[in-house]
Image (cartoon, rainbow, N blue to C red; front, side):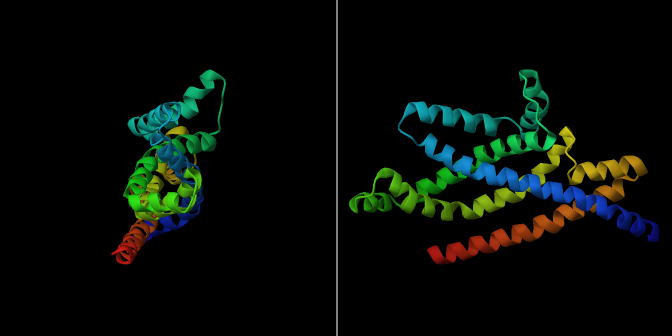
Length: 219
């Protein structure tokens, strides 16, 4: 037992370096992907076919293709077309696409949940369509969608472990490196899993608390 604790203690600094990369890539994916999701949600609802169909295609490809495939495409496929990306840039692009595709559906559900009377009221006070979206519809839709978006953020933190496949030095990659060097895979993977859980469990509880609070205010 003492030997195991010593092993974990010696491994923690390297795992924390990996955890930092995990949090960075998750933050970038969400920062790029959620605004993309909003744009796609509005695009899919657009009456203009030249906007609606490309938006729908981006959403369906992003949802239909596994995130691992998108990661492989960005890191290994794009160089064939003359565009080489670092592992961090490739992961950012792929996970942002996945995030945008899935959050577009979450946000679209939020947009549809806004009472029709709110749209009519925006028109009645003389707002343009853009101003109605900007000041009335989108803020309410994002508030409705907030719990689901926060829950999806937790899933994206977990999905960032897929970046192991493109040599990004995130948490799982660092755990695997330690395991390869020491041949102690089970203990190091257990410790890595504990670090994921230390973030995901409190985050999930916080999301549930926020959802209850929002439900209380809208009741």
